[in-house]
Image 1 (cartoon, helix red, strand yellow):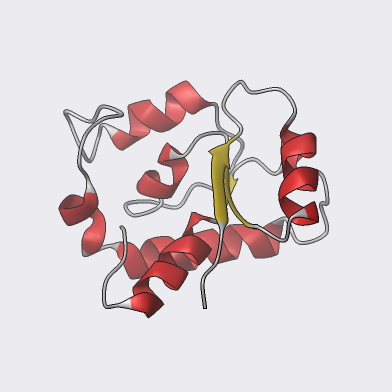
Image 2: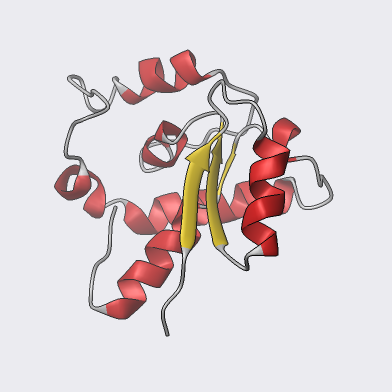
Length: 127
């Protein structure tokens, strides 16, 4: 079964709620990270349960991937830590379960759900 996924992050973008509404109206799946996509990468290495700004996510990530940059290929680097990152992402969703405002779910990510879907297609998906 084919699925459509919208992948975006909080970053400094306006209109996050509108993006959610539009994706939901079109029955698209959403892989959203707050404050940035790199939170998903950071969760491969450490828990992050307190509010964090995007620059801080990058700073912390560089403790584990010293030369990290946005265009860097990280699949192989992260692959061995995928299951722990998935568990941490699930725990964050449980923590924010009663919060319906995407803007204030910091930190949070649902990228693990997209990864799970991709893994189900043919072996490993993305880290």
